[in-house]
Image 1 (cartoon, rainbow, N blue to C red):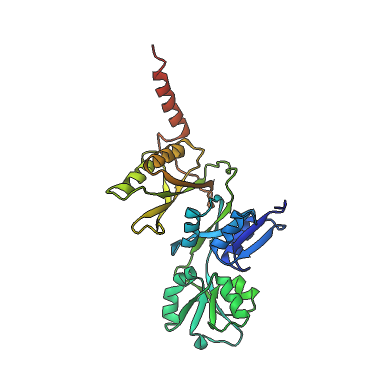
Image 2 (image 1 turned 90 degrees about the vertical axis):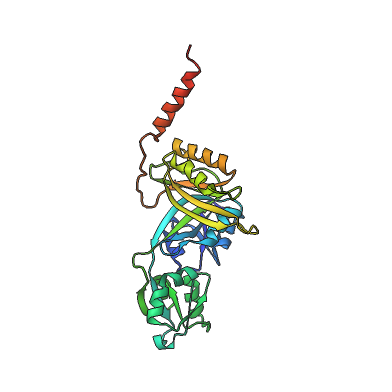
Length: 309
């Protein structure tokens, strides 16, 4: 690998992922568009790129399953940063195409889900053709692909690929955002800022009454807030589930370490995916009795019990 940083991302150029990448990649960086989240992540796993930027969650559909599953079961990667991008879509077509001509629309499945009601109201007969990304739909359309007559993509992709806007600002939920993560091979952790998140993947050892409650109790008793928790089925094990969890705090903090010790005692199949600054910069609230000083004071009190005469 050269000294010039390299980034894989969900391509092609013009995706919302590309917009997220532009927030973190320096101008001299080498960028590598990939056809799918797994392909982008594998580029960093193999050493082809130093970093990967992929979507992990959107405010309408929730977690991006391709990213969550690859993070859970592939060669371990580490989240070093999160990026948030506001999302609205453009319904675009080749010049000369009108709304009346549109029978099929190409786009990513998450984009379609975020515009489903708008489509039902505006083009009730239109059908969805899935593509690997919103910009890929725009690129295919611009190159003459005839599998659909229009696409849902970003305004940037519409312009980049020379398409015509049929409708702008298409969305069921104005103000929607997508959260992206920047990944690297495991290594140095970003320094704690006081406004951090930690992400882990946990697989329950067996299903029993109260198993999830037992897991969540490890965070509650240490005053650690969970900002996201999602279940995903374990491949090849019907009825078995793993959990992707974001928690408020950095692994360097005493309360977070104590919670992770409790989680590991409860479920020894735990994958640490990194501690990193929050995109919103909002400082994490510390409940009374759960600061680093509180934990150290409690430990010192216990240690003193062994030295009393």
